[in-house]
Length: 178
Image 1 (cartoon, one colour):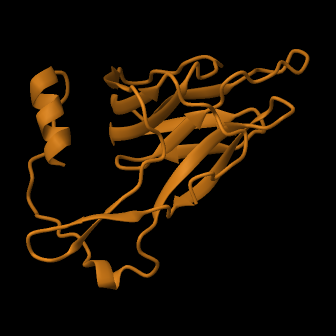
Image 2 (tube, rainbow, N blue to C red):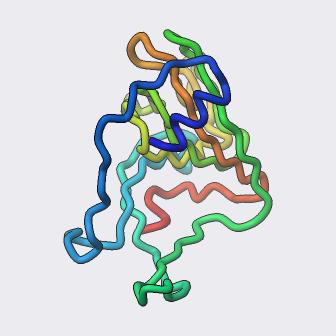
């Protein structure tokens, strides 16, 4: 919420509701299958059709020990040069069908963002949800649309954080990071 509020204050484009409560993270031992993080994978199969699959990242390893003795866990699904973009889409924005030109991780910071794949699967992403968009080079199938369709849900603008990895290779299989 702090990042979201700071982003909007910097952009001056959107209003942010006042913070009235403080959320506390659930202790590690109380999380049923820690460490896992859910994400949606927008991938392209060998026939060039895009799909959305719900995945759980669980490829964590111990990175270091914090000053209080707790373990710090790390997962690095993509290494190499990356570009970070903050994108604010105006209310009612809807993009046309398109494809990703590079592997990218997308995290909505505010508003609700939707993505629809060629197979008809559609997902709405809320703030904090994660999308791995690796629908690079989908194939045309007659006059059917190619790639993915995305846009905003509802009347609010949508703010996204996008991490693009130009040198990453799309997996062409779902849930590679499980």
